[in-house]
Amino acid sequence: MLIRRPGQPWHPLQPALHDERALQTLLVQSPSLLPSPGPGELAVAANFRIGSTASVDLLGVGVDGRIVLVECGRQEG
Image (tube, rainbow, N blue to C red; front, side, top):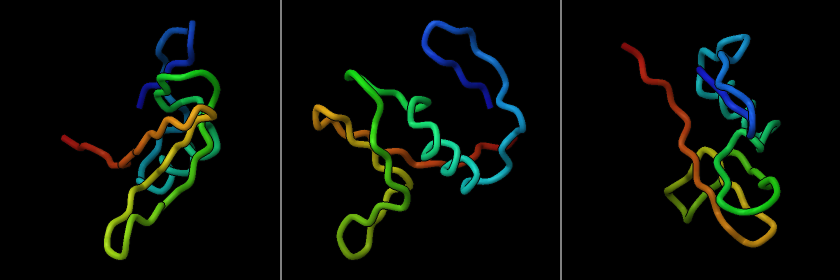
């Protein structure tokens, strides 16, 4: 996995993440890694329930009310 902070080059994430839960934890602890069209960082909640049957891995909400939905997963091969 590669990450990039604003104004910096891309670099490999160390240590590498090997499961979805580790990726969720990283993004909850470092919301600045998520794309954000507005100013400031997002407040992030993991495993957010939507209704009685649906959920999203991460829900981010900005200070201006913008919403970012994230589904975590790994592509192999």
